[in-house]
Length: 399
Image 1 (cartoon, rainbow, N blue to C red):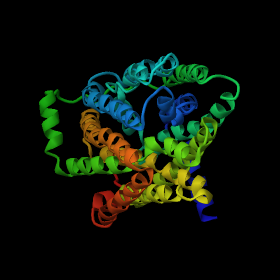
Image 2 (image 1 turned 45 degrees about the horizontal axis):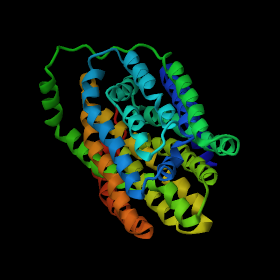
Image 3 (image 1 turned 135 degrees about the horizontal axis):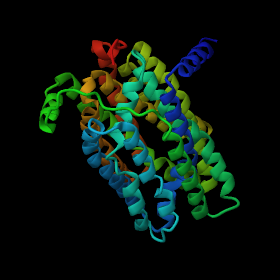
Image 4 (image 1 turned 120 degrees about the horizontal axis):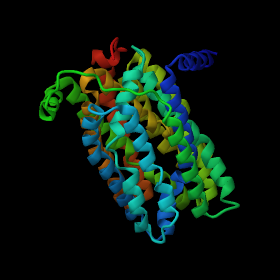
């Protein structure tokens, strides 16, 4: 009854969030209705096109490298240009990726689509937009709510994708995905315009220097890099793991994608509530331990579905880290701050899939064991921070 009451309270609070956050939620939902038709089995598609497990790791390394290397410049764009136009341009540019994928004959033909999808010059504008629109004291909830739109779409889309694969080819499925992504772009265009906060103009280097000298902010950003690295090691390799160990076909693996996304959705809501009430660091500790428990569980057939569900806590890691950065950043420098933050965690996000690929190539069992051990070790300093770092332990009163 207590959990039911908390969920009802969270739902009621979500309904009170600003209109623009609801539009972003809806756009994210439609986006992943399309994106989720294929994304969970993209690693399998890479192997079908002749790629090895190391090629899968390299592919995701390249995606993250492009994403995070362009993210930094996006921070300056977010603080200089009107954010609604920037966000719509971001949606419009990346929506053509599944269409490009649908024409691939070899695995490396997927690379142009991956590069376009991960050009993140305009991504910090979305984080800055959300943190600016978020009501005072509800920053974590605003981020987890909008992120939950992705997860909700991902719950439904793999089931649809699994059904469609029995009727159409994978290439046609990718073109259906393109239609959904285009519709999402139309929806997000209805958010309100948002100008960056007008302050006395500083040179870019001065802005960057101010952020780097903020020891509290930079300490958290640096630690978030480690959190991202450890929590991202296993994610791209869950579908190949299901195929290699349990011999599941694409349609079945897609159904596991739905379970994974259900975990993302429910856990992001619950952990967002924990983040607002008890602090982001405690919520992060729970997220990391959930991923570890999930990885352990997928080694046992009877707990396979539960394991995949728990690994869905990975999305909460992203939103909770972003929420803390938003709280620690200066209002007039949020765009640049998120640019710096995304570059740093990009180091972890870029290295993780390649390291994971090397480990998986040696032994899937060893890969799972090392990933679990790393997550459990990471939870120890997180737990210490949860009860010692006052600004992160307690909900901050300002955004």
